[in-house]
Amino acid sequence: MTTTKPSASTQRSRVTDMRRVEESLGMLAPRWSAWTLLTLKETGPQRPLDIRKALPMPSAPVLSARLSSLTDAGLVERRATNGRLVTYGLTSRGRQVIPALDALAGWAQRHPLDGDDAPVAYAERIEEALLQLGGRHTAAVLWTLRERGQARVGDLHQAIAPQLSLPTMSLKLTQIAQDGLILRMADDQRAPYRLSAVAVDLAEPFALLSAWAAGRTPKGNVTHPVWNPAPTKTQSARPSNGSNRPTRPAVAWGTAAVPVPAAHNRTVSPAPARQAQPAPWGVQLFSHASTHRPAATSAGSRAR
Image (spheres, rainbow, N blue to C red):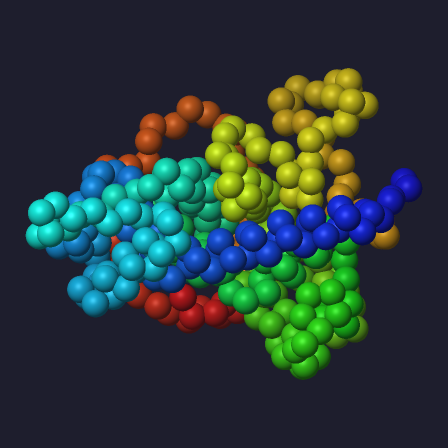
């Protein structure tokens, strides 16, 4: 198979796209941000006191800070009536990001962390996914490996963050590997990294976040040149072998595609067939046995 390196303009466009998604993840990652957005999606505009009652634990100052940051980001709108009654509600941009949050919840449910056997509230799954993916340079590492197929530490360092020291970048990659998102192709410190099966399954969330970050309204099965490329005409003409899922072309360039082994510290579950599902709001949002999972450290994973 012959692979072609993207043109300079295409590569610049992909870097801009990746940075937008990384900034979006960082914007949504602070604790209680997703909870607040999902609450307002369910209830409509609410007073801060009523929003706080719907959330498990945040103090008034923490909630005030989250509402302020979400308002500054254009996701939440503050309204005052007669200068006294203040309510907060979702903007159109806040409503448009919900499909991407739903996709993150589905990804987290398909690939739970080790030891996560207890029921977890819907919004909590999203919070955990954002915490895992919203770290500095995490999305860039996953993006680069998705494009290249595999890369050594030095190559990732130069491509993503040459301003960092090489040991700092190496530590970052070790952390991402402990989260089960990347792995080495051999038991050797010099071996290149590649995406785990868990990270490959981020195609839908990243495609939706990319569309949203670019100002588009994510709808349906969003294609993406890196994570979810549209099938070519040749692929569309091929028989489906009983599957409705189109064959994805290889997106690696400069390297042959290699089968992706399963992550070592995540439970890798096959993606379920898409079916019409009831809205995951209402009782499913908050009323699990434990609506908030305290931070804990499990073997091979960062503290959550």
